[in-house]
Image (cartoon, rainbow, N blue to C red; front, side, top):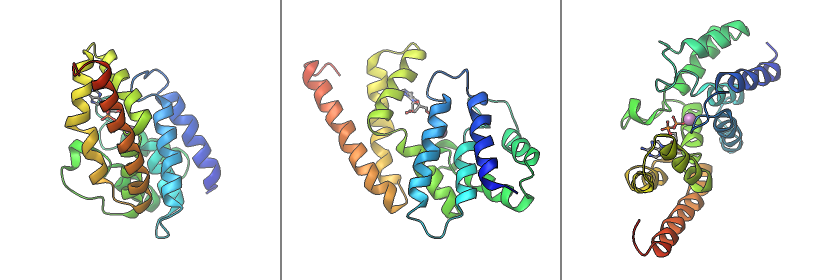
Amino acid sequence: MDRDKIVGEAKDYVRALFARNADGHDPEHTLRVYDLAMRLAAEEPGCDRFVTALAALLHDADDRKLFQTENNANARAFMASRGVDAETAERVLLAVNAVSFSRNRGRLPPTAEGRIVRDADRLDAMGAVGIARTFAFGGRAGRPLRSSVEHFHDKLLLLREELLTDAARRMGAERHEYMEEFLRTLEEETSGQY
Ligand code: ADP
Ligand code: NI
């Protein structure tokens, strides 16, 4: 099993899979989550970098909002086609299935790789990139600015407290402050309209 080659092929796979998703799930989101996960993994000695890499790259490959697959079918098919052994594949899927906000409700990821990929996905919803994604999502859904601003209070400003790894908590603190500054400036510029 040539691990570097499989990771490279997983990047190509997600570029093709998300090619037509111009909202918050373009291929760049997944590639950023991969980069963030590798940075977080560098500070988590207990984690397996290959499992982390594949879990980050495949974390939205069976997202229910985008695909009608059952039982992680896209991620499974990709790994089977590249000869990833069954035990490694199960560890990847354990991490992938620990990421979703709505599907886990209070449950913590059972593995280091799951904590890292969940943190990486949360970080990409914060800071400047999180602000950009939020208004892109709202615009695509035809929603007014006000509804995207509400999303900060409903979800994005709560993410800082949910980050699990030390490295993500450091990065998340900066991204949180940046979002708060953005909201303060928006309020000032619009005389409290938002
Ligand atoms: P992921 O599955 O990668 O965690 P989501 O599907 O939850 O991402 O959201 C994709 C992007 O769209 C995120 O940046 C998120 O903050 C934004 N988003 C999700 N719901 C809303 C909403 N109701 N209003 C504005 N932005 C939203
Ligand atoms: Ni994601």
